Amino acid sequence: MAIRVGVTIDRSSPVPLYHQLAEQLCTAIRSGQLQPGDPFENEIALAERLNLSRPTVRRAIQELVSQGLLLRRRGLGTTVANRKVHRRAELTSLYDDLKRDAGRPTTTVLQHELVRDQRVAAALDLPADAELLSIVRVRFSDNRPLAILRNWLPPSRADITRKQLEAQGLYDLLRDRGVRPVVAHQTIGARPPTAAERRHLGLKPSEPVLTMTRSAFDSAGNPVEYGDHCYRAQDYSIEVMIDER
Image: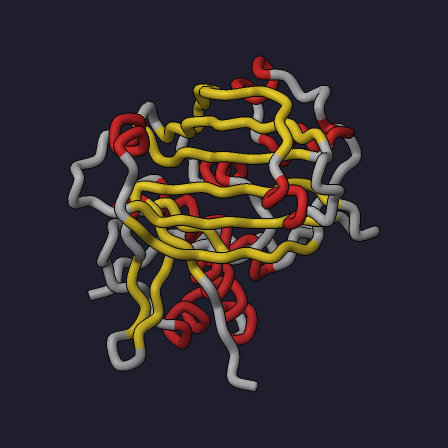
């Protein structure tokens, strides 16, 4: 039986009704009031109980589905998702995702140096001999290792320091410099971990890593960053919404 979450809707507030509802339901999930696997109150019952329109309730629920907090299954209804870190297929960083999910991100920088790499330069549409800032970090969530993040930045971003990378997310640092990625080519895969990855992520040889590579560009088509990341597969998932065309 679905648990009814107490919700207060302020119709005089400038905050949209769907957003008020989504925020309070989100709080109920993240606080543990709603547990992974719990059945979620259906759209019609929630709309009637709160005297809201079905489109308003549907939009709020879809917001939680998009955040990876709810799962919709045909014939089974809507349930609370498990507590993996979910990344939506959008241009956010892992640091942003962990902050959003109250994951208390921390970072250890393993490498910070200028390099030349023809493969990465080609992915960023830069000359083959371009000097790139190469950084390798281990990202932790609640003091548990979650990912190894390898990134290469164009020479204009070589001012980013090791200390800054330990205190902030990469995309936060780029936004501070007026750089905003708006389009990217991204590839997702899986493979066995290397010995170094097993050591840094605390994995057994049989446990796989989820991989993601990304070439990101700003609105003018300038290269922003190239990333080659791996994640503990049991603690991380990437969610993609697809539509029938």
